Image (cartoon, rainbow, N blue to C red; front, side, top):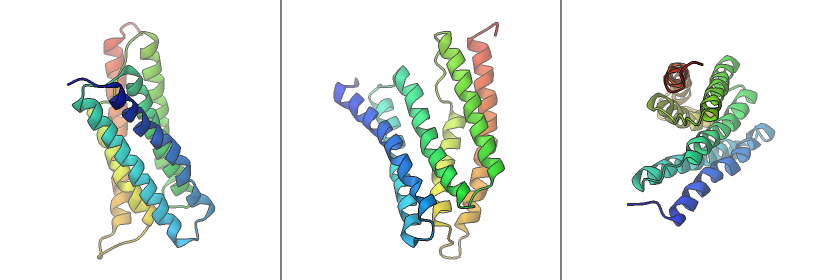
Length: 187
């Protein structure tokens, strides 16, 4: 089955929607005392995360993975997660060191991918990076809600999950760098 023009537009729309929804999450910074804002941030983040899953599903199902998508999709993910991290950081719900290391890794990967692209090599997302993203997108809504339900400490579990995502993130950075060295020799 091939990717039609409509399906390409749908994938592009799903990715663009993540970028558009990201600033909505920043509302949590400006209205932190209003109880419903934490639910809004969590719901908007979940909706945006689902668009990431749908976009990937459509691209794989209809063989519609494009070079542009290999760059735009991870960039949209990073914008979404960055908006959440900024909000959580300013609300003192996440550790600054964690945010710094995760963002530093993303800048390094961006540089590696750009260097590869300058040599006409595309390095797409790898499983470790995808797991990192999935864990982050699962944990962030729990941090926005900042509560325990049914005596389950979701905030502690989510915080631990983000630290685990950091480990995966650093491992995937090493994977990207090794792949870059393999695909772009003499660098």
